[in-house]
Image (cartoon, rainbow, N blue to C red):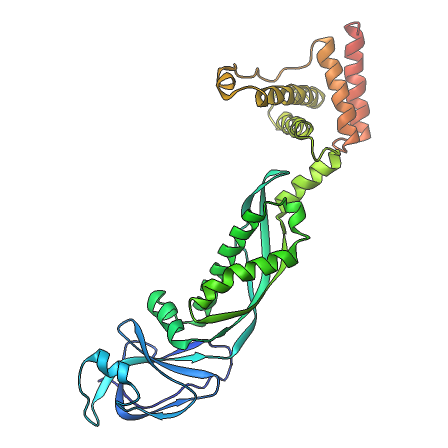
Length: 343
C-alpha cells in the first residue's frame, strides 16, 4: 500500500548533501493539507513526470491547491480536501559548497610547439551555490537523471575538465610554459565554465587550478632533451633516441652477439638510423614511400664504420649513457680493430 506523507521535511545533519529525494524511490502520495517544512538554506521542489513544478522556500507550508497551482494544473484533476496526489519532492541545499576537488582522471594530450605532442595533467578545487532550485532540478534531475551528491559532483567535474581541455588547446603554449600560467588558466577556466553552470541554475563562485604540468613520461622526455643541450634541435634529439633504441635492442638476451659486439653494432646502427630519419624528413611523402627498407644490424667492418662507433662512444660517455669502465673496454676493442685495418 502506498505511503501517504502528512509531514515532508529533510534535516541534513552532515551539511554535505546537495539534493535529497522524498521518497527515495518511486513517487510519494501527498495529501492536501499536509505540512512541508523547509529549513533555512533549503528549497523544496515538487517534481512529477520529468518536470520540476512548484517550489517552496524556507518556512512551514500547508499543501493546498492555492500554493501548488502548477502541480494541480499539470496533473489535471480537481483535488478534494483529503485526496492524495502522486509526486516527488527534492530538497535542494542553497548554501555554498566550497573546496570541492577536481582533477584529470587521465592525462590530456595536447599539440606542443616544442615537443610535438605532450601529455598534461591538472588538478584544483571549485565552489558553487545553487541560485535557481527549479531550473537546477529540471536540468540535473529531469535531463541528466541524477540526484545523488557523488553523481552531481562527477557531472560538475566533467564540465570543468571539458572547458579546461579546450582552454589549454586554445592557449597553444608548450607544456613547459603551462606550469607558470596557473593564474591565467584559473581565470580562463572559470570564465568558460561559469556559463555552463549558470544554465543549470548554479553560480560558480570560484575555481582554482592548483597544478597544471607534464606527466612523468613527458617530464622525462623534457629532461632528456635538456640534458643533451639541444632543446630546439630535433635532429640531434632523434639521433639520440635512435642510438638509444638500437643500444637497447643490442642488449636484449639471445641477440646472438657478445656484449662488446652487440653494443658496437647498436651504436653504429644508431647513427645510421638517425641519418636516414633526417633525410626522410626532408623528402616528399611520395619519395619516402619509394625508399628501400633499411638494412639489418651489422657489425662495423670498414674504417669509417669503426670511426663512427668510436665517435658515438665519446657522445655516450658525455651523456652519461655508459660508465668509464665500459667506455675504456669498448674503445680499446674498436681502436685495436681500427689499427688492424690500417686506420
